[in-house]
Length: 114
Length: 116
Image 1 (cartoon, helix red, strand yellow):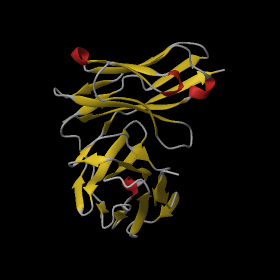
Image 2 (spheres, rainbow over the protein chains, first blue to last red):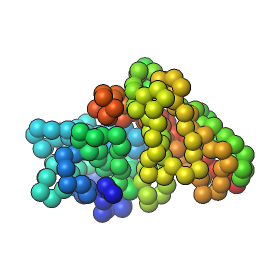
Image 3 (tube, chains in turn green, purple):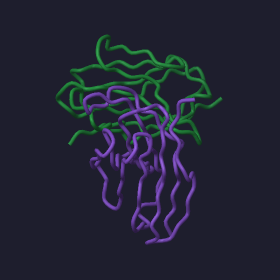
């Protein structure tokens, strides 16, 4: 079965620190990849997505992610976090060409200390 | 404004009392889906629908039913709720083409369900 692993369950950073959240998926074929964010009390919003092309994807609010096919990874990065980035982050993927389901990871709670 | 709406937002009920959570989208999306979110487990898909009258099971369909009689609506039905269905539920919609998700999923605000 396809799955997504987010190894960091809770990350605590100070403002201005750099962020990298890990995401690995298990599927041997072509994939579409997503990062969603859920701010406290709000619904999920798309941060960025990768369908094809340049493996370095830039999203909203200064986030970016790099797709490394050989590592089955799609790690999320931000050079300098802000207190307002405190949220839960979910990696997800669907299979290209047969994309009927979106599989989510278990999420990473990011807490940014002011 | 493009949006996915869910009702109710909060619901407390008792074991065995049938309930329906409604979901509606105004973006003319073909694809709609229901997820449940539980601590440490992320979002797990319950059911999805590629278009009107076309539905399929996700990863955790047991104890749930859905219907898709109109393109904009995708209600989630719990015929006989049990305490293990206490969760936060999200509806989502997306463009679809030839039966595939082709774009970002847009999520509703969530319904927090407690089954006593």
